[in-house]
Image (cartoon, rainbow, N blue to C red; front, side, top):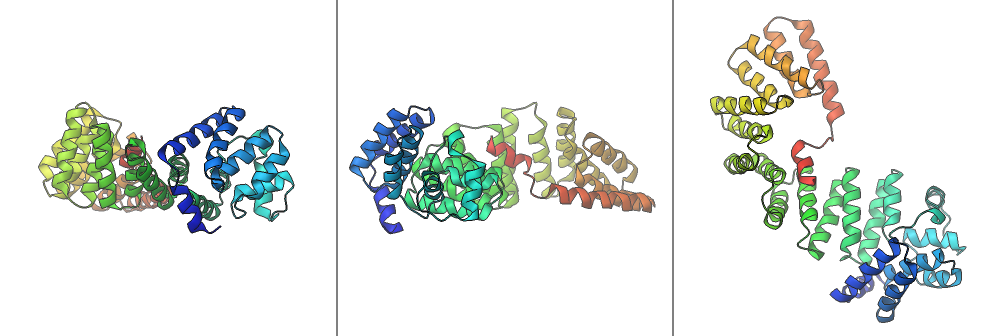
Length: 365
């Protein structure tokens, strides 16, 4: 059967059938295999060629030691799916015994693992660092049932955790298409787009999450960050000030207000915001780093030095502060210390590459 035919078949599932299928999967995961089999049978009676249900049922039969039934279901599954090949190897079917399948079978023996059948190969591949194969397998499975919100949600979270944000966006876009009120999926879709610096789609997703969940500090900060980077600092300021009203004792919204004001060249107002942020949260190094930068702009080298040294004392891994420290040391004629600070800046910057920003982390929560 062609991929197009399978997609069309998947789309024939009614909402009631899809709900019943997901209910059978939940029974499967809870080890109620007889109940799961009844659910799969109902789906396959109506749609005999629906591959996901057939693979799930093959696994359930196998766990119940009904090997002949499992082999029969498996023989009708898609041979290019990794799970079909893994199960086939276990059941003694004739399948490609390539090194990858052998590695997967050895790493995750079915005797000890019960799982979402169509999603597991991708998750295993991710855990083994086989990223390209994981993405390819995900796309093969999605072509069979693009509206499977459970599977796409699971894979989107897995892709995000391994910093594969492009396929994560694909997965969460499919989740929200199938489940448009899924707040978590909208939130994670926005976060993945933030990491990819895709400001416009990040804004759309985060606004939708706020519409569904109501105003939350983390979402407002993430949305403001997207506007700040777009750049639309006026819109960002409005959002950051709304975050202040929600959490007046938090230092982070004031820090973000300072960032936006500084981008507008309003140094005095920015300084007040950074000072307020540092007062509310003395453990945040960022406001101190920006205060030091403002003092440096004014030529207040001694004050800047003291402020920046406080920043790195709060967080020795805050690499931005070392860049400004290097500038201060040069101005003060302390060349050797400037070189050390700059070297530390470069080292920490390399280590931090790919680490999520605070706004991206907040959006994921």
